[in-house]
Image (tube, rainbow, N blue to C red; front, side, top):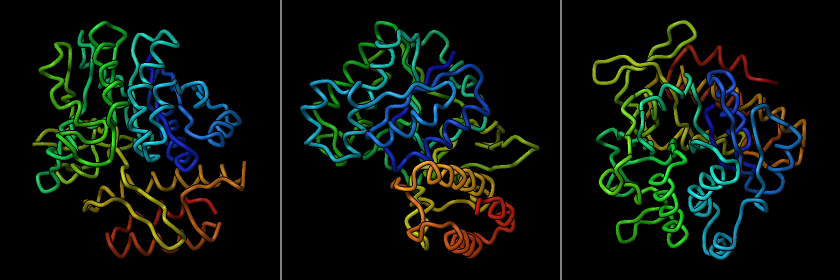
Length: 327
């Protein structure tokens, strides 16, 4: 059994549903613990009753230490602050043998068990940013990305997790200060501080906008492959960091330059699935505050998005994905 936890609020509901869909399609035996970061998100998730999922409200999760510092953090900073606490909560509350934290805007293309098998007897799994050189921000954002991290229910792992939780409660802000940044820079020296840390080696895990420029990408039947440093791997997961549906006339894929085939093979289908979940959620509750068209219908957004993608990336494959988008 693979145990995952993630956290998001109402605005991120479609991303979270995309994540869950990818696990349903590609993961074997799994359970996903979702921390709903506002009441409306919790209400909707309970209505959806997603399979292999447990929904946890803030009232269940937040303790005195978190509530004490909550007013001092922005929404994003508080989410970062809570990350180690969500993992620890799942292990302790549900008696899990292991728990993997995953960001809500990643999408799996292959069973993540192939990544976790690398750990062997190690207790902690970390994921590199693996920056493309021109985007390298290791000195600012850290060597590791919190996007995919595993902790086992073992003494050293729990000690590291407890230390990280206390550090984030003490300081976790969206700025660089005294060698710290958010929740990530704390991880930089874990390979030397702890004996049971494994750094993920499979380049098919952790592909993201800040490193995808180093990869080749191909679709072979129903499977997606990436080439990294001359070797081919199955794509395990991609992190759709920075993808935002700003209005009925503005779409932001990310802040980095993306290869055209990546947009066609990854972003097209992901956006299509997002729109299906957006439409379903709006039908469930029309008052939901989600990232998408100001005009409250999809037609203008689809037209403008198609023009944007074709104009910027000039890829004919985008057409078939847009045609599949819901009306």
